Length: 176
Image (cartoon, rainbow, N blue to C red; front, top):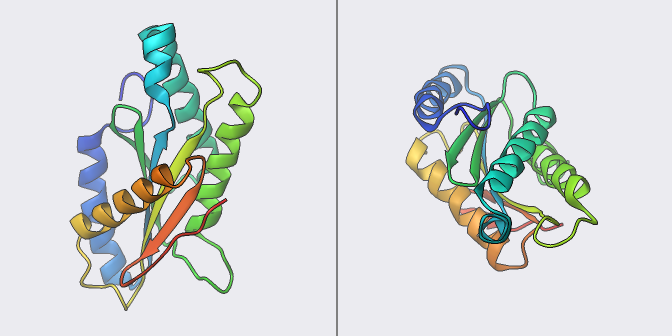
């Protein structure tokens, strides 16, 4: 993506399919994060698209700093960013993996924009979907996308600036 410096959607999806195949082959978990900038429309409407573009660049930079080199970050569309976390799952007992990464991103954005005048006092909402192995081996890419999107919607509609996590057949919202 020329604006943000993260991968474009087409490249991301190609790699996403490859990573699902690799996860199956090596029996590994895989997680997907969908990140949306809360109240972003107000930035464009009030301050103009150049300021909105600057915000997108800053958020993309914060996300890239919050993930590992093997993780894949892409612009899904508009102000939505999608992140693939290979070999990363979610274990409720340890509260680790994908949730840690999602919270790191949420906190980084919150800290960056905290205290700024509206509409620049921005936050993000994050939907997390985890594909466990072997329990979720039959789960296809579109199911993982749908689950991450549902969790993002849950985060947005229950207050924003939070992370919601879903695992197949056991969706549980974790908020911050």
